[in-house]
Image (cartoon, rainbow, N blue to C red; front, side):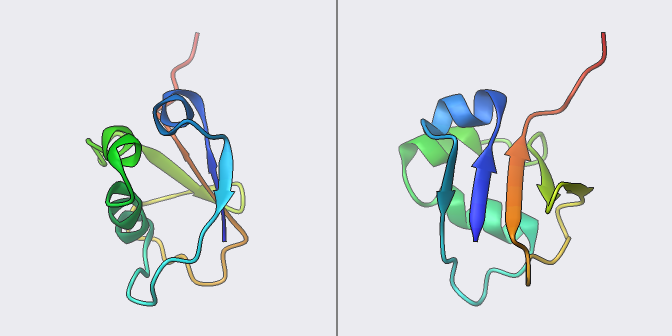
Length: 83
């Protein structure tokens, strides 16, 4: 699946996007973030506070408990503010 990173999540990880194949037991956005966190220091830094990072599946905002099965693209980004 394609993972896309935005704003400071991208800056901390050091890449804009990547294609990954998480293990079968990773079934939700929260589990995916946890699995990514274990992939290295830069991921651990980006997902250090998982409740802050937001996600979208196929360009639709989702909650952390959203299933990732069948997702073409999952994006991670910080909270957005207006202004």
